[in-house]
Amino acid sequence: MLPGHNRAGRLLLPRSLRRVILEHAELSVTPGREAEFETAFGIATGIISAAGGFRRLSLSRCLERPGVFLLLVEWDRLEDHTEGFRGSVEYQRWRALLHHFYDPFPVVEHYTTVRTVEPPPEENP
Image (cartoon, rainbow, N blue to C red; front, side, top):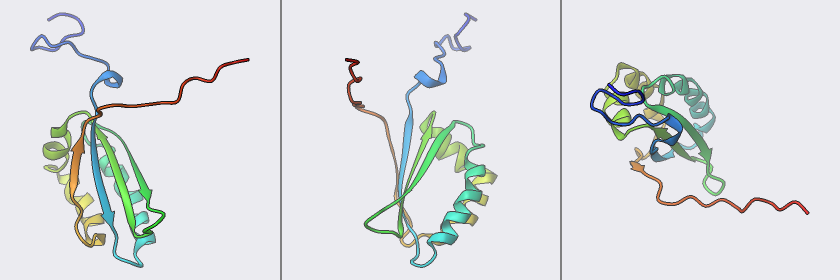
């Protein structure tokens, strides 16, 4: 086996250079239960962050619709989420902590980056 390659002969890229799978879910929380949801979500982050292929997540609250949250989770591979995490015992704990807050139940979709744009670097006078 060549250094830097797996058993199939594929080049192993550093994690930072691999393609990222972005999970997107708009979470509508039952009105009046937002604070309780945020507390439960804080506990649930310890579950998902230990999953194989997990990179990071962010949970944002909508300004115009305070009962709506945007969950973005980065995974190494789609299967890390759809098979690994969702097929795990830990997912059952995640589900028990969070799923009863949603009304309606969210649609979860996965994306890959097409383009990223950043501002140009500032010039020093």
